[in-house]
Image (tube, rainbow, N blue to C red; front, side, top):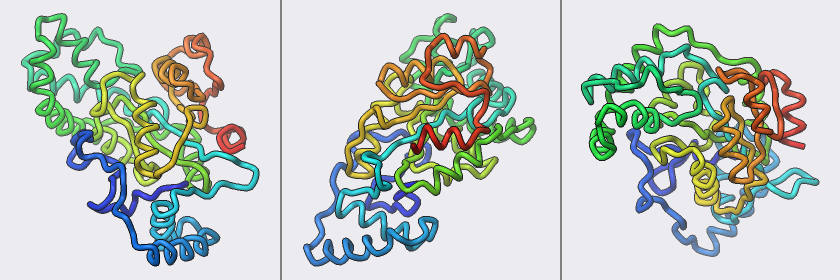
Length: 309
């Protein structure tokens, strides 16, 4: 997996917003500090030589990162023209916490807004955290301006309660997930990321339970936008910023367990893979006509053929 950001410092874009904040457009770096020609040449030579080493070697990854920044190139396997991005949803796709997130969000809403409104009637599957709050509170008379003004406090409360809820939850790493992530991590022409309705801080907490965070080079979260359809373009922009490269939507794969995952992928022109490990009826997923459907992610060989072939 191409992952320059494990070693990012303040001089470069970080893969995830610090301190659970969204990425303000004004803070995004679209260019790197120019390097002297001799430095560029040296890094080019070093980068070329280290491309043949084990990708999991830390020094190699650091040098490769500089190589990509200097040359704007990514190494693709022979016969492959383009780099690919594989973007995962979290809840119901990678892991399940059996309602811990919902319980934490409800407690946070009551704490911050004085009520959870219609939350018990809202279907969470595939919706972003802010959208769930809007749909819960607006029907009981709390306007969006008030909701947004207190959203920062809601996040803090939500993360506090999520920490406690996760500890007592029957957490489940879904079939085939780690094997697939290992496969992608060792694939030289794949960028692996997140496309999730979770707040950034919530995503980190859930993935850290299973030690999954280091598999992902970057993410798009509901801090970036409450609308899932806007996430694939943000992911594409983020890849272009982090890697100084172009990527087409046809080279982006979106994997998720809800109709909203499939719709956002299809609307952007990405390849869609539906997985039946969430709470959505399989027929409802098939009705969305995803490019592929799997009961779970355990068929690593078939997934490799689709994602890497």
